[in-house]
Image 1 (cartoon, rainbow over the protein chains, first blue to last red):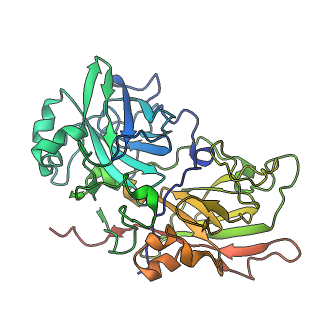
Image 2: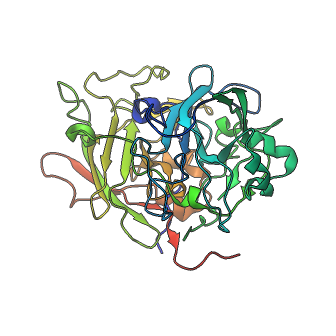
Length: 186
Length: 230
């Protein structure tokens, strides 16, 4: 067995190395599915906004299929959809993704999960990537999601993006303290 | 298939008081342990439409040659079982030879180099190999504690084969006297794991009368061959 390479922080000076053109555009205009904008902010334990963070998302397409060889489901890939997004927060600690609501994908036991995005948070002062998930308000399947059910009920709202307009969701991430976002060991 | 969990002590705890910026940026609540699903064992291949020929040579991205010590950094991307990770994106970024980043927020009074941006990317080949030509970055001061200096380092970003193999790290240089004082490197609890972030000087990679060579192999989380433990 080879020893795993450890994590280190991004540091404050990463954006010239890691910014992707249109990194906020997870879904193209021609991608299938319900198009939505996800907006949010990132805050620390003092309520300060993080202007030096990177948020990455990974998701299935609207049919619930990942563009990846480990997804062997008989479901269609969308030629206009890869599923990855990466944005740096701006000076006001804000990030935005343009995407489609993913389809339901099977969980560890084969039962379908509620629609969700896998989310990674990287920043100065974050030594090892923080992993969370984004679910969508108004999705009835949230009630039967096996991952959400592992989270204490009072903390589940931190994982659920609020529908602020018909096609716009709000997902604020709090790294520490009151309203702290649930992060996963996975 | 599941992805192996990292051994304790490999990754730095986010609550690392020696690195002051962690104070208000680490979760207070324990992480919630969850099983791995299709969402975690899949992941992005690489998020670029194309990689330019000069993207892995940071010394030829401008009209002139950058100042400083030219170096070659190469290595392999593997999983914990030693299987190579082909066609995976490796991104790097770094300070110039004077210890200054091409970044609007870096206020260190050291010169910028108009011929050096300090960012590169490449894909690993079929054997998981990558190679960069660059300039040895300088040390630079930071405000973490009195007389604090970062050892020379190159930032690395890798994807691997799943959402869980994602890695952001830093490569250090052998013999750098600043390493024992650096709270970021020393946030890694396991000394052997810490040592894995130090590249090896390699005379075989060194090109005569041109550049010193370093090797830096990167090991990403691999999959369990056995069924997942309950």
